[in-house]
Image (cartoon, rainbow, N blue to C red; front, side, top):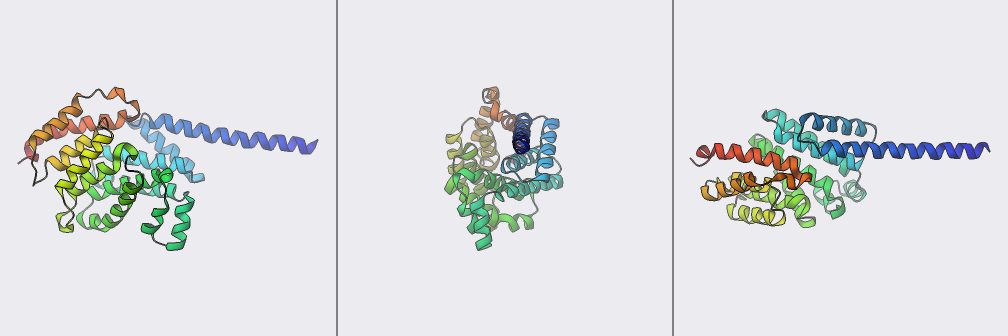
Length: 273
């Protein structure tokens, strides 16, 4: 009889733990859905960090990495911005630590560039947000730090391109569109023709993800070898004319995109000097 009671109590306890975890994940999802509200974003970050302090959970770590990426986009102070993106990289790396094929390959090869090749499309999310945060860090970092992470940025994104090119609304095409336009010319990789090709692919994959058109206008249209003011305004006008309420799952990103589009249009005289 005592054994049956013990087993019953144990089963209830385990079930309760499962409910608690599921409840926390649901809470994270609800907060993240309102990430465009600063207080909700901060609450989501705090909850994710408190969970990860107890145990590393892949899904929670991915959400935290995404939160930091979104927070970094809104930050104006450059040094603070860089710190935020590095926190996003760290959170994404925590997620990768739960991918068995990757950790086994890392233990064997000791080289991330080789180990990430074991990450499948099903596990690409953790890698994607490491790459995304690191790329944004590289964009705003001083030249020396930019070059220091360039190799890593490139091989991370190369694997995303090879594995899941349409993930996150054609995110890897969006990245390479900016990369080929903005990479320092000293690297020999700057190529506005490739930049346009990648941006066109990203728009084709997800025309309603407005950040693509904003970056297209900002990085490609204002490039010293391009200076296409007509396309610049066409892209930004399309962004500003879009009813973003149609896609609630990306409303926060599209809201940011519209705000950036207004700012770019207001400053276009400087951009096309």
